[in-house]
Length: 110
Ligand SMILES: [Zn+2]
Ligand SMILES: [Zn+2]
Image (cartoon, rainbow, N blue to C red):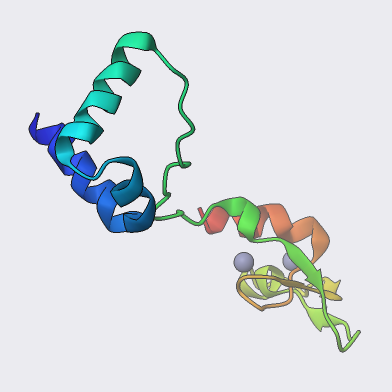
């Protein structure tokens, strides 16, 4: 019952116009709710709100740089290699990353 009451308050908070016309009192809401539960009526529910999206590797994708210049790959530089020249940047880190080094880069960012 407490959960139902909370649901009513939340519904009223998020959509007062609709709730007040449809269920002016908690009793009205409860009757509808029970009917739904008993009859297994399919109701349209709002999609769940995703509170936080953890950054994942696929966010580190390559983006063609606007300047069109070749720059030394950031990952190669870290490894002390002479370095492949990259015309692409990591979209997240904004550093030059050679296309073949993208996998190394993404693994590091996990
Ligand atoms: Zn590299
Ligand atoms: Zn990155």
